[in-house]
Amino acid sequence: MNSQPIGIFDSGIGGLTVAHAISEAMPNETLIYFGDTAHMPYGDKSKDSIRFYAEQITNYLLKNEHCKCIVIACNTASAAAYEYLRDAFKNIIPVINVIDPIIEEVIADDQIKRVGIIATKTTIASGIYQEKLTRRKASLEYSALATPLLAPMIEEGFYNDKISHEIIYSYLAQPELKNIDALILGCTHYPLIKEEIKAFYKQRIKVIDSTTIVANKVKAILEKEGLLSEKRMAPDKYYVSDYTDSFEKTTSVFFGSAINLELKNIWQTK
Ligand code: DGL
Image (cartoon, rainbow, N blue to C red; front, side, top):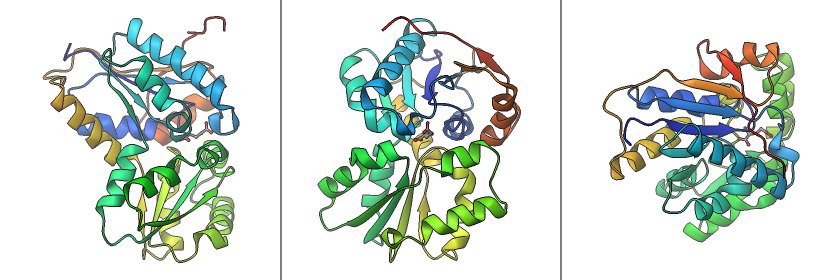
C-alpha cells in the first residue's frame, strides 16, 4: 500500500502548483496527476457538474491507478465536491482538500484579525471559506471577493507583466479588501501571482496560498495512516482530459520544470 501513488486532480493545470509542492515535500512518493482540461474552468460550473467530474476522476485514480489517497488540488472542486467525495469514499481512501489546511493556518495565527479571500466565482459563492472561518473562530472578520479574470489570465501567460499588474491592482483596490491583515489566495493558480500581490500590499500583510501548507498536510495524513512511501517505485504521470500544445507549454510554468502531459479519456456516460 505505501508505495502506491498519490492521486491529485484539478480542473486543469493550476493544481500543478500543489503537485510540485507535494513532490518537494515527499520525494519518495509517486504522483498521478489528472487535469480535467476538457471541462475547465470549473470556476463557473454548477456544483452538480463539478461533483460528477470529481467522482469520475476519483474512481479512475482509485481503480485504474490504485492511488492510496486523493488530493483535490482545486479550491473550486474542494468547495463543490469535497464533502461528497469524503463521504462516498469513506473507509476506502483518504480524500484531502485544499481549503481546510488554509483555514487551520489562518485560525492558528493570532495576528490575523481580518482576512480577505480571493477565488473563483463558484468558490466565493459557495461561502465555504466564510462559513468555515466563522465556525472555527467567531472573532475573525472576513471579506470575500470573486476574481474570475485571474485564473484565465494566468493560464494565458499573463503574470509579472503590465496586463496582470492592471488586473491584479484593480481587484485588490476593491472596497472588500480594505483593512485586511491577511489574504487567502483561494485558487491553485494564484501562487504564480503571489509576488505581485505581496508587492501591492508592500509586503505589509500575510499572503497565504495552498502549496506548502497542503503538501505538509498530505504528508501528516500519510504519516498518521502509515502510508508514507520509503522508496519511489515509478515515475510520476500527468494526465489531461484534453490535450493542446498550449497546455503542454504552460505546465512547466505551473510545475516549475518541464513535464510530459498525456491525454487520458476516463469519461463514462452520465
Ligand atoms: N484552479 C482552480 C481553483 O483552485 C480554478 C480554475 C478553474 O476555474 O477551473 O479554484
